[in-house]
Length: 285
Ligand code: GUN
Image (tube, rainbow, N blue to C red; front, side, top):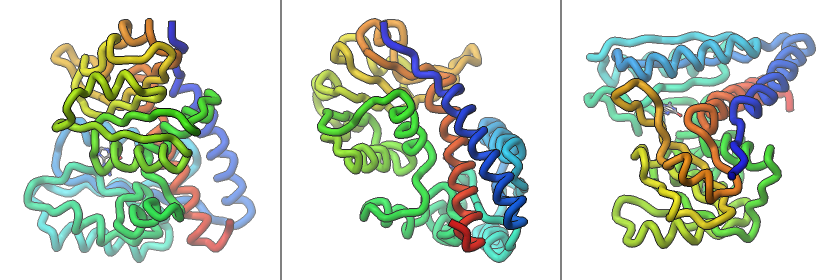
């Protein structure tokens, strides 16, 4: 049976460290890290995510502001909000919750965020830095997965890594981080032929698709590490990952559950990026 990777426990430990570092920044330099989260419209799932981000920020001792805007907000209005936050010295990190309503161009909005405050690491300056191996922030979900692998002493070097999904938020940056850790990386997506065969070669398999049951037990190499980023809300209200958990758990050496695996790490990395942003903007290292 696979060891179940306890994302809540790893996240909890890292949040305690972030809280201690925050207290130090406050007492030594008088700087309280500030995180602003902008949400447009009334998508219930997005509102839950945003509430959790704010609560987590307050728990580690940050200031946090949520800016809620109506569904029919225009590009000019949203840009003006971001620009105001760019200029606000009490705010070190800015996050615009995605997805945005259809009249808003998310790429253009992300470009409006000051790259030094871009704690999602979505701005082209930051994504370009990651491609080149030089960066201040890493995107939260892939960074959280790398932190989980480190916490369980799982080495990436020289291993076959297969990432299923090629989103800008998870799949693509995940592949880059595994590559930077000297993994041999394959990216699979909706047009991939023989997904099963690729998955079966993986020592480390990351699935970030959002299709419950996509990864079955017979697609996993015995002893592989399986990281499940899928979070699909089922009709009964429960969350489901991409893996058939019981089946895959009998074959893998490590597996992340949903919920309680990758999820808690994503917000933890957002907190860390905000702390780093506050230090950089204040001139502290
Ligand atoms: N929507 C889903 N995940 C994310 C994320 O990591 N950042 C932002 N800004 N929006 C999201």
